[in-house]
Image (cartoon, rainbow, N blue to C red; front, side):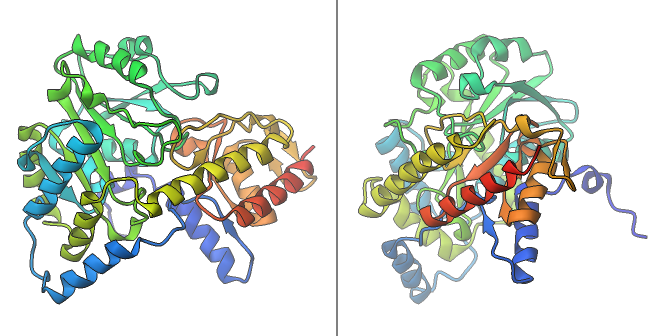
Length: 399
């Protein structure tokens, strides 16, 4: 038997990808599976972006691109940050990567030494803690409650800080909860870090444009901590470009250079054709017909899901203001059985629903809250309606 490296043995499989794999296996057997486990818009990439990629092929953008990304794309990202967020960055402070996930990995591996602590408000995106494991850091979780819409308070962060604290990583809008921090809430958090000048802040803003409360607020807007903020963003969610795999950071120059150096040894530059498509996305203001229609659809789906799920006994709902997730507390069903299958936790419940009514969801353990499950409503209203009907019927059999 091959002796695998410890880092692989310690690393967990992404539960979102694992649940999607299981749903594909059931679908291959002929089952009508509704997959609500993946965070992927069901819209097609807009034609004006696809056309830019086709033109790039014709123009022979088929050679190695610069490691941190094409200069004009990095300039366009700087223009976007000024236009949408009133933030000033230079192209040298931007590194384009193969998705926001690689961007986060670059940052963590460039900054975290063994034993360093990384603060993570919980619930959190699944890969944060695993990337920290690879860097041999220690994740310190700061639990948020559903009654506070899963948002941590400044005093909770203050209490979690220790001499070993190196980073905090959080997302707004949040995956898995859809929670969105207000400007005042972010300023309260920023004031905490103003007192701890050695701690860096990683702001995952990949869902920036899927926001139902108006203008996106970035923690980088506060001058007194801006030089310690690393923004992570990309084109996957807002432009329905998940498969193009383009993410980026905007960061203090020293950190951007470190990520450039690391990426140069791991993957080099992101796909040249995808970068040309991303350039078109970034230079386009976020009020196109396509983006307005997508945001309108997500809002309607959220409202539909909240209405349908509210009719299921025992389900405690949060009220997401962004992204395309709902993260309800389903602990009411723990300890119940349909006479054959007993549900003791969120994982049991997800497997029960997958195998009984062919609806794929992700257990909250993956995101740091074992009492919850994550619904992704990034699919059609017909499928969402059918999925909740199936779930309601299956849960009604648990006594």
